[in-house]
Image (tube, rainbow over all chains, first blue to last red):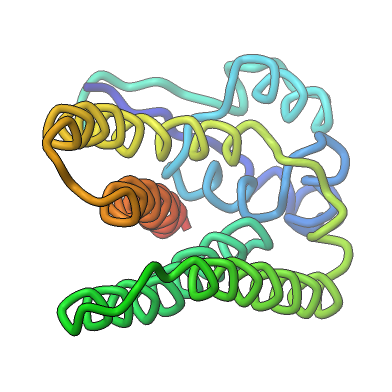
Length: 70
Length: 137
């Protein structure tokens, strides 16, 4: 089973220290879901992943990384 | 803790406490040979509605922004996953209750047996929701 890691926390801070709540409002998710995605406890849908990447103006593969090993 | 998780806790705790009281009373009245407990059942349902409405409104007042937000994809997924196990349990147990209910049991006993299974399924659903919210918190 692989894992999906992400750069959301770093990207938030690079974008004016954006809060989880601000990001959540931009992508129509709850703050708790953004937190769960950041911590790798919830894998977002493809649509949500694209929306997150679009907020930061980055391609999907710059925000999310898939690795085979745990 | 999100608004949906709080509502799951409200549902879990209110159903557990109020219906535990009802079934405890129903069991004791039956063992003492009392008549049907229709008034008790109606009172229980009214008490449950009042408790859940008051607690949900209180939670919504504390965090109105969270309460107004529609369910997102994670919350919908949690709802779906939390419904799967209780549905299977409810379907199986109702089938068993119908088979055993064919025997000559009083109607109030059959009603209480089916209500008990329904309540257990609903408590199980709230419990599954809470577990999944905690796992991804």
